[in-house]
Amino acid sequence: MRTLVIITLFAVYFTRPANGQGQVHGDSITGFGSSNTNAAVSAPTAETKTNVSVATHANVADGTLIGFDKLAGFPFTVSDDLLSTTNQIASADEKVNAMIPADIRALDHRKLSIEGFMVPIQYDNGKTADFMLVRAPFSCCFGSPPQTHELVMVHLKPPGVELITDGPVRARGVLHVGAQREQGYLSSIYSMDAESLEKSPDQ
Image 1 (tube, rainbow, N blue to C red):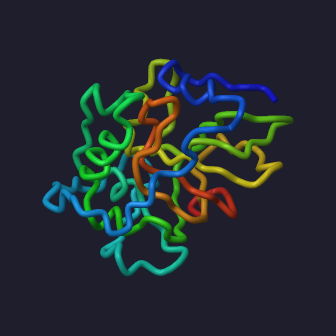
Image 2 (tube, rainbow, N blue to C red; image 1 turned 90 degrees about the vertical axis):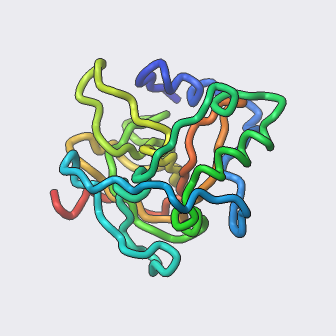
């Protein structure tokens, strides 16, 4: 297995404990009490083709296409003590989850489709089963890394799929919403157990 180092910010993904311990999915936040329902939602941009609008989240049908304009369409800035902690994880995760709007939390454990650009974490013989789906591609080594809510950690059953780097892809599967950590570091708030992956039909 060959590890692909993308950028220093993502080094935490490449140093997972060998015993496989650690949080794989975000903690279930169904019925989570705290919310930030007044968070402003930014207008869709023309940055990529991944900004698909969905009017209502709580009533979305299985397979509905959700865009990063919604997944990342709210302010999300975490302090250093919430970004990295090893002895206050439960408290930190509760505060992080409270920053996620209620309509986004309602997508937890829903089967959805999400478009974005593949950033492989690990690959073997040209295939990957674990990768990040990001809002916009890295233009080069100087490109800005995605913010925490601008990426989805995707897992496919082995042997995975071939890398697709010439445009956006569409992943379909069960979305998990909630704080997710690697060795105490807040790695993301979205992950997906994907059942299929294909090039975006718009390509």
